[in-house]
Image (tube, rainbow, N blue to C red):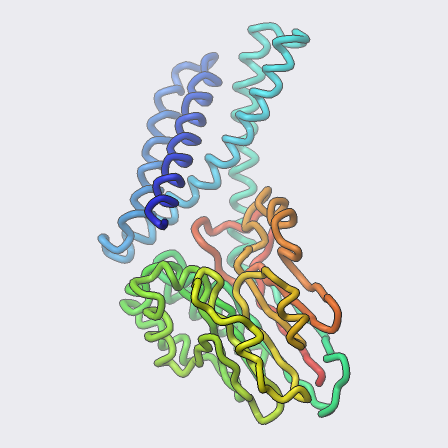
Length: 372
């Protein structure tokens, strides 16, 4: 199944890239001297992208990080070029029937549209990289439906770190400082702590950073889908839990004799337990906080008495127009949501996969004051 998905994804990637190069070549007809430069640049960037995707562990870390950054940046560039050329092709279809452009003015228009797209994309990427490197702190004040203990806890929730080659030790150190600066009672990490292979995490000794997270009531984590792309489904958790982080694999943990943290395996694990099995027998008078990486099947949390569910996974589309698709795909693809007595928060994530740009989205940590 994974091999089939990988082959289909590659075919789509090659097809889109071929379309972008062809349309760019055609658009530069009035300035034919730049055609070869455009094609060679696009091909070299595409090679960098494929190298970063397929061979990241076969290069020295610094080289892998540079190639991955360049290649993933190209992913943003050719996405916007693809959308731009698609829009121009639609205009060309209308022009075929209505004739509002002559052949000469159409050629000028196509080249001008290409130049404008590249200029706007360049500016958007500068802003987007700034957005990625300057995460926001989202604060929420929540209460369970019927508070009985008259207590409150300060929770810091951090999803989708994706540490590894692209997000290395230096960035993780900054993330840990940001978490600790919020003075949490409890830190929750709902999946995708690592990106793919866990080896770059081990090579950079990132457990030093994970072990520096300070929370008197503990640090709890669950697997996301990206943990299943590692050397084995438990490779990431086996390493990171040595830092003192508690991984929950379809289990509930009573904390401070006051509330439960419930951790589900990612839905990509076909053998994960039903939520009903995990919470059966828990004290109904104590609040239940659920970590479930992918924000799907919200009914399960509501039906099983979960007070707060925290998810990630979507990145809120990461860069525009991805956020528009996320809104269509998920019941709640980003932000706060409530159904019945259950609070939900779907975070856009602190880290991200691939391109280090937040265009129309934000990197964030979530600080929740929960009264119970």
